[in-house]
Length: 430
Ligand code: HAM
Image 1 (cartoon, rainbow, N blue to C red):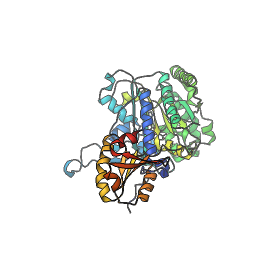
Image 2 (cartoon, rainbow, N blue to C red):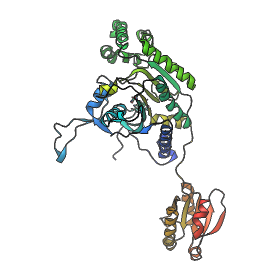
Image 3 (cartoon, rainbow, N blue to C red):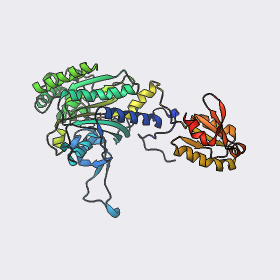
């Protein structure tokens, strides 16, 4: 049997599928659209793949994502040609770089600023699959282009919490850090390097490489987390320039005003290269400290780096699987599948022929209606309608049809009454 590729999941109809229940996904999608609009964000849907170069430059050559996690494809070109000369393409490992490209390419800076964008959909990383870490996963991504104020960082942190609350999830932990800007970070980076260098040989292989390329990443290494040199390492928040310090203080003031408890965690450095100043992750005890429900931060140099005008940016992406998994483990009830208003139960093939126009009329009237197509016994049809959650069953025997009536059963109360076919729509609607 051919099975789904490792690290991917089918989203299926039925509460028994837990976090993979498509009704839960639809509910989450409806809520995230609603809250995005409420906060003034508009939707932009970028393509699922982009030029590899975009992620190499945007996310950063030295990141794990670009080094080892990209699904890259060589287009074959027209008529099965070899695609020589065409740039390689990569399935998006995240949304930010693609959204920035779309912002620049479509001249969105000409619209009233700031541009507040949301999107959601699948992203792809060739990681080793494990709990909460997949090869195809889904993100709700929120970005603000063109606003440097710390109040926007706070808004972006708050909107995620508001969505989680709406979905019924509390107990969130907000971890916050500032990793400075091109003015103050180089000096801090050097200080960190100097501190770690004498211990380089005691660190894991990855960290030895990171030490020279990107020493901040050593701070969030899972392998070396308890190494004394890392625990005693200088922290970025103590080496911020005046402007970064002020921005970070203001952000915390806004978070306090919003009533969002948070913790300054100098180990949060994030795995993507574009960040400046604010970085944050939101955790839930049920997922553990290793994996965040969502994360993001500010990236004031990215738009310029990708060819746009100097424009500040800030945003985050939330892992939709992770949110639904935590909700499922919290035994939060799912929204349930959509229920038919009425199920038509014709008794016999002749009755069904005469019942079909009634089905069409019910649907044209906007009702969710369905019918038995399998010539089942009344008992079997009632059982099926009960499982589907139908509010009413209309029983249509030959004798009833001849008299222009049906028996309408209210499935919640068990009450039955005779209803004229011409008033069936009205009877089901009330
Ligand atoms: P990220 O931290 O790489 O950031 O991913 C954001 C979230 O996506 C994670 O916290 C997690 O919930 C989910 N996620 C990431 N990788 C996987 C995976 N393999 N399996 C399941 N879930 C996963 C970004 O992607 C940035 N673009 C966020 C951002 C937007 N920063 C500024 N704007």
